[in-house]
Length: 284
Image 1 (cartoon, rainbow, N blue to C red):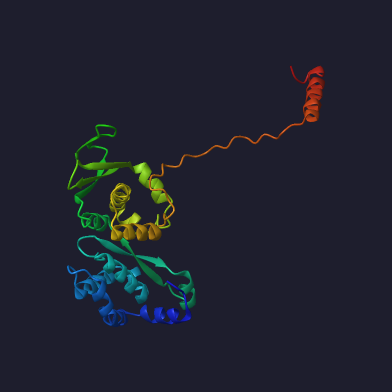
Image 2 (cartoon, rainbow, N blue to C red):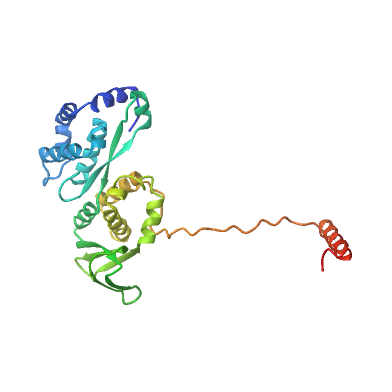
């Protein structure tokens, strides 16, 4: 959002407490009603947002304006923030400038869709029956193959470290399609995210694994404007807007020694020096 003087004054007030935020939501009810789909009511959306705020101390330190903006973004896509369905979340980011101005920590929340929200938007396209996303553990029986006869088999056995994550799209017509990613591939994407060490990558790691593979798979499906918008928002907030979702784990590169180019004169001089050393018994 634009950082203007007027915005700063509003932000300073909005951080102070619950009543200011309630008043802000009350004034925004007409706009919310215009963008919300029929299955969501204004009162429910505001109630869920207020409840999500009360559960997270960092969101309580966030500006009311940023909370309202996040709710509006989610409302336009027909997703609930912080609801029981896990469609979308508030993610607080510290605003360094405002924190310095106020002498206390000030945060701004941003809306990000959860993997269930992306699945819901995919199903709304009318071409997909359902989408599943699962993590695979080291003790599981898991096999998959791509090619002309793709196949995937997964029999969970219990606890253990996560090794893979996969997504299956069940279209209304045609055979199911799947995508598999290793934990290494997911961690390579996490490493290049600006939120790698905070937010859902820390609190809900397996959920983020599922979302990563769901996003990778859905990019091959026909995207609705809402689904494309949700993916774009998530990419920008999480921090890999320019990241190829198919990125492989980075391997450490060992650079080759730099070799200086040699002239004929320098080669001749070096040969002369070596001959002299050999003659003196220093080499041989």
